[in-house]
Image (cartoon, rainbow, N blue to C red; front, side, top):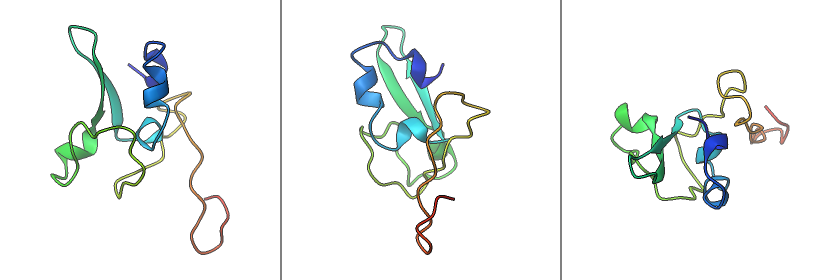
Length: 87
């Protein structure tokens, strides 16, 4: 399930912050219809919360989504710190 499948009204919550554009993020829907963003990075590194409170403004594990593996969810890379140009 992709972030584009989020129900209207809830979409605005998940369209802010870093998680919607992160490679590690996955939308999870409970049996009752509640929606959460799961951080798969948490399975590799215990410093990352499994379900981070949204919106996330800074994250050392942030990895830009690959547009081919998650079409429609990709965001541009942040500018390079040294040059200021997009990576």
